[in-house]
Image (spheres, rainbow, N blue to C red):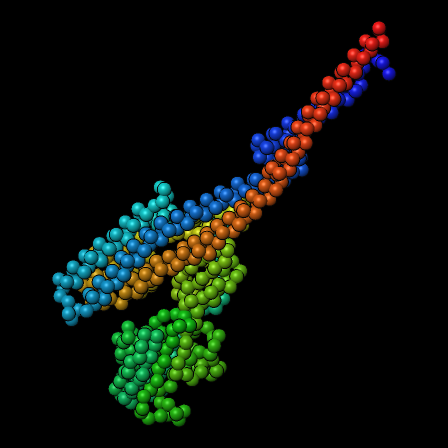
Length: 519
C-alpha cells in the first residue's frame, strides 16, 4: 500500500491522541478543582442527585443558624423574665411585711406601697423595652390576636401556640358538657319553727383553706348562721348563703372556689340527735346532678326523688368542655389544651361554666405569635409558632374578684378596682391572690420558653447537625474527586499522550518512503 492522499495510520493516531488529550484535560480539571463532577456531561444522573442534596444542605445549614438565633431570642426573653420574677418576689416580701400591721406603722406601710408602685412600674417598663435586634419581645407584639370573644362566656384567654395551616384564621369553639361546681352541702332547716336553730349548735366547718369551729346559740335564724360562716371564709375557704334568700328555704354551704381541689365539710360537734341520728343533717347532690336553680328551690322534689344524699362532705367539680371537638383539661373554671395545633389556657365565666345546656361559644385567633422556621423546608411541619404574651402590669395576675377581673396593676395605689388595693387598706387577701397568680404566670412562661428551647430548639439543632454531616458525606461521594484514582488516571493519560505523539510522528514519516520509488 503506497497511497499518500489518505494517511490512515496518521488519522488513527490523531483520533486516539485527541481522545487521550481530552482524558488528560478531564483529569487535570478534576485535580485542580477537587470535584469529580464539574459539568453536567461528567455525570448527568449524579448532577441531579448532587444538586438536590446541595439544596438540602443549604436549607439545613440555615436551619441550624435559625435555631441558634431563636435560642438567643429565647435566652434574651428569659433574662428579662428573670428580672420580672425578682421584682414580683420583692413585691411579695413587701406585701407580707405590710400585712404585719401590729408591728408596722402607717408610715412604714406607705413607704412599702411606694416601693410596690415602683416595682410594678418597672415590670411594665421591662415589658415595653425588652427587645432583640429591634424585635420587641414582651410587649405583646409576639402574642396572638383574638377576635369575637364573648366576655360573657370567656373571662380571659391565653393562646400559647397555634397552627394556621391552610387558613389565615383559626376558629376556636368551646362547648361546656359538664358544669363546674363548688363543693356544696344543703341544710333544709326545721319545719317548726321554720328557719331557726332549735338548740345550741357547734359546727366544725372545713374547707381548702382550713378548719374553724362555730358555736350558734339556740333560736338563731339561719341568716345569722350564714353571717357567722361568711365571717370566717378567708380562714376556711367556705361560704354560706340562704336558699332563695329565705331562711325558711334552708341554706347551702359552698366552697369559695370551683373545681375538684375545692371541698366543703360541715359536722356538728356533740349535742342531741334526731331520729336519723344527727340533729344537724346536711345533704349533697348525687354525682352528675346539675346545680339546682329557679325559684323556689325544689327541695322537697329533689329529696323525694333521691337526688339529695345525706353527707358531711362534698367535693367540687372541674368544668368539662370540648374545644374544637376535643376534650379539654378542666381545672375549676379553667380549660387547658396542649397539642401541636393548639395550646391554650382560658378562664370561663362562672355563668358559662355552670351551664352545660348553654350554646357553643366561639372566637377566632386572627394571627400573631412568634414563628420560628426550624427546618430546611418552608412548611408547617418544620415551623413552630408560639405566643409570648405581654407581661405589663395590666396583663398579668388576672384574678376574678367579686365577678370582676383584676390584674397586677390593681394593687398600685390610686387605682379604682373592685378590691382594696393599697397595702394600707388592711385586707390583703385579694392583692395576695393577684400577686400569686402573677408569679405563677411568669414562672409558667419561663418554664414554657425553657421547654421550647431545650426540647425543641436544642434537639432540632442536634438533628440538623447530624443531617448536615450525612448529607455532606453523601454529596462528597457523588461529587468530589478521588485523588488516588485521578492521579492514577492522569499518569495513564500522560503516558498515552506521549506515546500517541510518537506514533503520530512515525505515521507521518511512513508517507515519505514513497520518495524512494521515484529513484
